[in-house]
Amino acid sequence: MSKVVLVTGGSSGIGKSVGQYLTQQGFTVYGTSRSPEKYTASEFPIVGMDVTKPKSILEAVNTVIEKAGRLDVLINNAGVGITGPIEEIPEAEIKNNFETNFFGPINVMKTVLPQMRKQRSGLIINVTSIAGYMGLPYRGIYSASKGALELVTEAFRMEVKGFNIQMTNVAPGDFATNIASGRYHAPVLEKSPYKGSYGQTLRLMDTHVASGKDPLEMAKAIHKIIKSPNPKVHYKVGEFMQKFSIVLKRILPDKVYEKLLMNHYKL
Image (cartoon, rainbow, N blue to C red; front, top):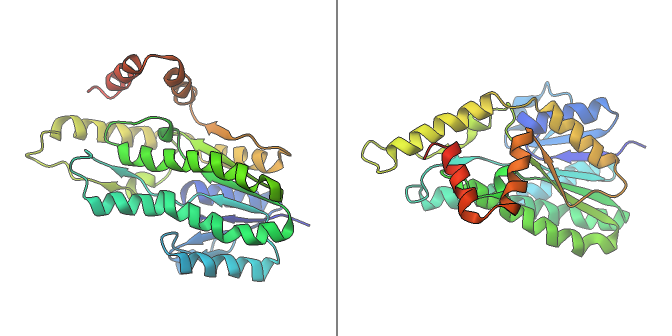
């Protein structure tokens, strides 16, 4: 019997690539979107879900369980980018980012756990970010929301082990997706003291995404995790230097590492 997989944010970018690849590998895949009616031609069914609304999460999860009879794998992929000087990002946008990238995934996990406990099996994969391992200039809120999800996963996986439920993080680097178009950009204000450095960093970030790796690489990495009998706590997928930056943060003095980041972003 093929495993039943739920991919949040499955209508585009990494989520779409993961859903398509797993479908081709014989899994029964359901994706989610806030506007499922736009994706009737999808290779796998797309159900309606807004991760910021618990009622919407519950309805989507119940729909999948009613149709498939079980739920074996949750891939918590839905997320949104945010950039800007922290001083200038509206508080409402900061809260919205955490609602989508942090509280949303937690609520999805809470909603699928009763079914996985009933089955005495399940796997939850939280898609975080290499940016979650470090505070990046003008991406500080994004780094914080993804870093918070990494830490929650570390704790949560220990709490659910006794139910034969596994949980892990997979942190992508830059991939060629439409995340840049969907993220909240604080405007580069003409009179802002950050105008020069923020504008320059924004252009650099967009270039990184545009020249990023093929999302198929993430799909293959997630497939490997699903096939693993004992998934690790953390996985990183991306360019060598992006992954190596995490190692450098661990071994270098804080100020030396900070200087490397500032040189990279030309600050």
